[in-house]
Length: 416
Image (tube, rainbow, N blue to C red; front, top):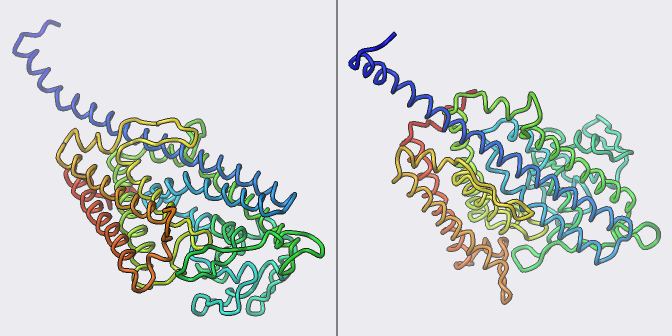
């Protein structure tokens, strides 16, 4: 059938909205797909770094010494780099948020796990705070006796958040951190935990007793971390069927992008700005320091911030140096409101500049000031550094909210 010019134009005009809508959906989907690809790369890196941590711990346990302990500590710090960048995938994605408690819970009552100093102060009312799993092959919890003869990954997973207390952290990065460094007894002064390597030596040279069970605990808790990270990697891997990635990609793209905004905003202001900086700043307590045993908190906060920036800009630098880039939230916003995209990018850059100051201060060769020193009462310079970060995170979160509003995304409409 041949159409007249008028009818042909009507067909073209009538088809334009549908074409435009289809193109927009395709672009939306590309942003969501790239977000899932980034998550797969980041959790894959976290898993690989954890395997390297396990290798270092195996070497340490085979031949405990100052040198092999230091190598295991270095591997733990390296393992934090990709993991902290993964935290931006929490909050908006329930598969990550529901899983995270076994992996990165803090602060922990370390008396649940091992020996502590006599003046140790635990969370108020926590009946598990002094149970000392390493010293006890069975635990009496209010008349219920738990068998801890064998410290397997499964047993430790069951002991995590014992009695419903979030302070009873038996697993994850911070349990391993405590087992490598021990308590930081320096308070707000310079110095991290100083656990002796002899805590892992069998025989007469064993310090603080129960070295064999301490070795068993460290080995099991590291294996559990690897199991958990492997599980999360599969949830985002494209070749796996029936995983969370498929669920996310099947959502209305607006809901998936809302999850991205929700994750960025929640980590920015609620978790990093609120729980990890504002609370510590107001309490002046080293117990509120995130990586408190290792004094690695400045890097933890830096990589949290970088994770937020990564998602907005759609980029990630892998641990082997590859640059992953693709359709981003920034592109999505810029296509509809370039000013909002630019303002948000600038706010993210300001946050990273403030976090870089934190890192430089903590890593300074002369008179370094770690996070627990910066939050000390009377440290005006430290409080200004942290207040600058907090202010930048507030401005960043407002910019994210405005960017979402500019493209008609409601960060609270998550599709579940």
